[in-house]
Amino acid sequence: MLLFLKDVGIEDNQLGAFLTKNHAIFSEDLENLKIRVAYLHSKNFSKADVAQMVRKAPFLLNFSVERLDNRLGFFQKELELSVKKTRDLIVRLPRLLTGSLEPVKENMKVFNARLFKVKERHLFLTYLGRAQYDPVKPNYISLDKLVSIPDEIFCEEIAKASVQDFEKFLKTL
Image (cartoon, rainbow, N blue to C red; front, top):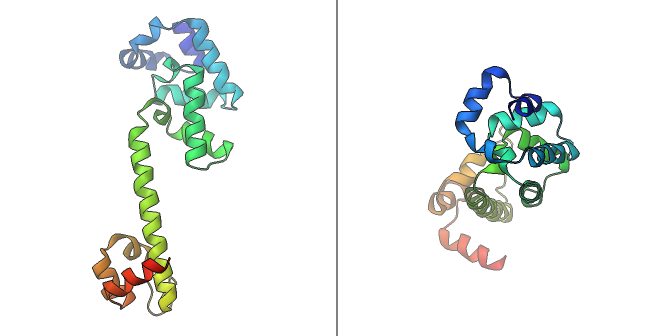
């Protein structure tokens, strides 16, 4: 097992920390571990990528090929990423594969809701002729202000309209 971990890319001075975090690796079948590494290579993760991923997410190799494939597919589909961008994301943040998907799904809901709100506000400003996002021009509206302030302040300070006008506009969408 130790030789396998070294072959995967865990250095001698990292073995202790790795095994402290994931002593359950000893209950895994060595052939299954090799199959999981081969699967990652088949998805064009380099040897260096796999080593980095295993160091950052010690439980990665405890996941079955099917579960790894499902997780990779989830991130590629839900985030609408190319295969390469999915691979780059997972190399940087391999714990996405081993952690719970619930926080990710929740964050995606919040992101989609915020994106929807930005779109509504942008359309309202466009309707009013006030959608001006160039910082060198007068009446500049920062993205930060567009997304972070409550509707009342957005209407009063940015759109220069009433909340009722904004709500009426939203009903036309």
